[in-house]
Image (cartoon, rainbow, N blue to C red; front, side, top):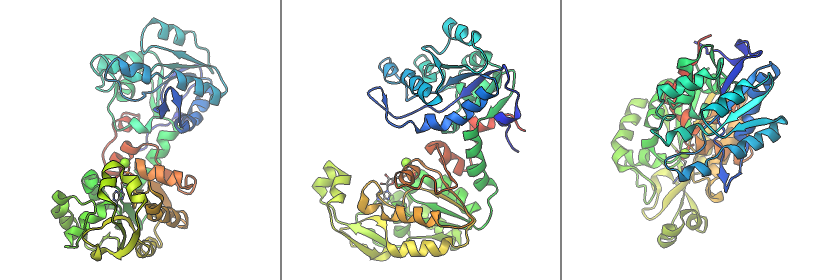
Length: 409
Ligand code: ADP
Ligand code: MG
């Protein structure tokens, strides 16, 4: 069941409605990271080279009240796009109406129009985010073909993705970025090459229940790390001291360990510290960056210490467990990677995966992807997902509306 891609449709002279993810980080109207715009260029350029009229749109931030409008104005993004594309981009400061319709009607093949933040429509009854059918039908009426290249919002049922797909006359297809996400994450979840190893870390068991369950069904092994480990340690009856631990989920973790039949691999050692409580109350990262650390076996965490990273013996164990793996999916950092001292485990996992031969390696998850990129491993993985929330839902085995709405090949 493959989805149609932009390569599969005729684009010449067509008005192509292209949903991109230009939800870039901004500070005082200045874009602080252009990565999402850069990532959209191949699909845009492909359509332009094929002689399409390209109509771009995206959401930016959240719009709840009037004051959110100016903060989330897409005009600076259109300017940056113009620079990166080396082509004029006609920006229309509206999400509907005569100015937008005229701009589109005047387009020639190879030209680009971009319109204002789709969530400006949220101000009056959340029309974009609640997929108002009138809005989806209106946007669909502006073009001939719909291309969805916004994976980051593919888990949302919005007027600018499913709404348009439901109403457009012509085809609804994926762009290259979305296609890549479907190929890698979808491929790993639905049809992995075995042995398939999942590495799950991050903050909470409760955030990741569906991911753990889904991957436990599909993977040959599940390696657990991050703060999540301590809930599992507690389930085994270990002292976890001051470590992050979700007491409400200890029984749940116990149940998972029972049914996993040895498939779940836990850290064998932990880096612990005893930060000053008053300092922690002011700034957790600062407080833990200042304190002494030691490595202890996982079942020997002192009662007044907390675990903040996995230890060297765990990395050795993970290395053994990963030997021969053909597919690896990783979600969730192994420790508090925001602080250098506790980023060692996360970096070691990057290194292990970068050196795995013949394996497809995938990162899904906002913080884990950011960690790997900031540590210099951007090009060492087969795929690093661009969508935090969307990739998590994909790993949970959920159907993403923004993918499901596209035409089958
Ligand atoms: P992702 O976004 O990749 O899905 P999460 O959001 O679940 O990952 O988790 C990321 C957070 O988990 C990071 O902020 C990191 O500091 C935190 N974390 C990891 N290990 C620990 C730990 N041992 N104690 C406290 N926080 C941790
Ligand atoms: Mg996160």
